[in-house]
Image 1 (cartoon, rainbow, N blue to C red):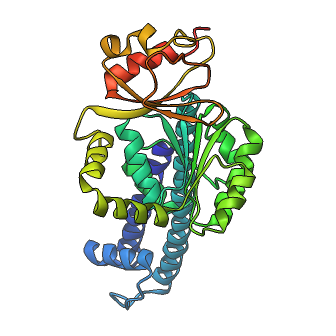
Image 2 (image 1 turned 180 degrees about the horizontal axis):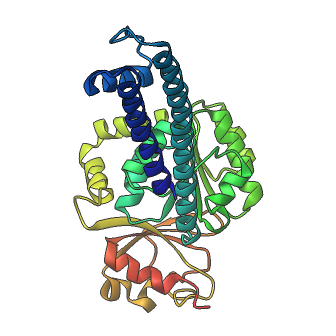
Length: 330
């Protein structure tokens, strides 16, 4: 329909040019090129002087051409605006369809510098995620990066629902202001109580407020960067090793958190029972129990309980095979 309308408008423009040129030739008997030139400058409203001494009838014809051109201009402007609206509507429709197909994903709120870095890491780890962003410049970046996104304000409940928060596992809040991240945390927690919420706080005084609002983890990027720099200075080899593991582009190793689900094959079994080293070729470096107690270098005879979280090191493929054992069977 839009293509047909565009063709009709183009035909209308050429029709006005042709009729205007022909009218001048008939009325004042002037050369075709002079008539075409007069028609062009009339439609363009550039204000040049008349090409020849025009008759009264030619002046009247100029007025007809002028108002026809103005009318056509408004039609073209309206058509362009409608195309922009239809494109925006189509983009929202296409994104909504993509989001509906995604389950157990991350919801990333904000696509600034930190949001872009997080998105790159999620992409590298082959994680499913949806970005929420309202800034038009950032939306252009999202389109260029081929990222699934929802256009809107992440602090609004309906936008969070459109992003599939009800079926998501994790929400990451990296909005510009601490106040927005705080409000986002409250909204997300009210919609889905069991959602894991990780958010950013640029001011230390904002951290306890966000934790009271329901954030599971609150990160201060400046403190995190300072801690990393200090560790790099004190133990560069150790930091480089972990960077090598976590940078999936350099090595097919990953350090992952694997949760033991109730009813899974791993529940009630020990590392010895599962023969993890031989069957999966991974290393369980720590176990975080549901009480919050961390058990580093766990005993091989420790029996896994539901909701235990294992910190495991291994290849991406082997970790994926082990995770299958840890999910609920029903």
